Image (cartoon, rainbow, N blue to C red; front, top):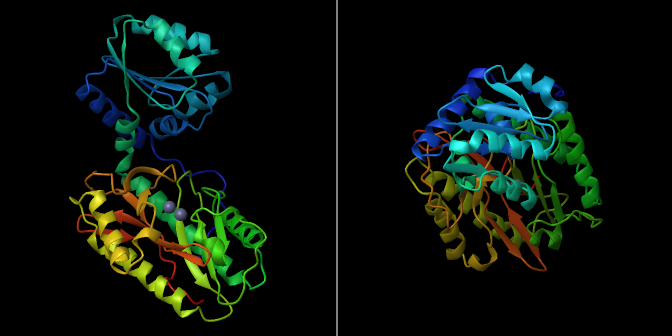
Length: 370
Ligand code: ZN
Ligand code: ZN
């Protein structure tokens, strides 16, 4: 398979965003919110397709949604947001004035996203009569089921990630440092996508017992565990993939045994995935498999997480997440066992929930010895 170097992102159609805003406003109606303010960069991007460091999507009921941004993004916003009115806000003080003017009749207002306390206090001052409702979780829920168009983009990101890992593994040699291997990942991610979706984890030997080890100058020795957790970003969508491999010599029987346990947990969880099941039940399947093998205390993180515009998004395969799986959701399945002072193994795949179960999008081989 071949990939061209990626320049401009392929645009999603206007109807995709019209559909997203329609769902947002349907939900707003059910929550009885007179107004809804979307301020986080990722959610503004999700609902408008515009990537801008500043802006606010204001959805009033009744009334039409309006996207406000500043001078720097105005032209781009007017060009792209053909499906929505665009307004201009110059300074934070103007934002409060706009809210004060529009919000006289508002009673219940939803907001999402992190913001400086000063900004929120200005909102409250502008609209002292309003009940503010935090919508972080609700909006995250709206993004959990991916449209066909998003699924296509995520598939492409995962495929690019598989190709990038293959490219890295072809070049890995014993004696290379974690930094060297991290550099190979960076180069492959920039060649096959738009760079890394998150800070790559590369660890060798006992460093692999730290789940999120910072790459350093430890060098890969023959037969040692090499753990690479990497994600290629493509068209703004993330991918996420972990493989643990051995180069230059056969692994110890301990390492091979732990690898089998982790792979078994990964496969059992994947086989258990289907619509209607709760996320925590899938986490439990993998956790049980690792506990039964006697390593429960060495699997100290969740089984996986949602994936999309962000590398970690709702829902998650964790002990606490009771979200019921639906077709179109995309999550990772990444059990691991980390033995302090010895080594660690994690195997991570991306799955798409389908009507009948799930489709494993990650196609990288799951072999310890390469
Ligand atoms: Zn990962
Ligand atoms: Zn992950």
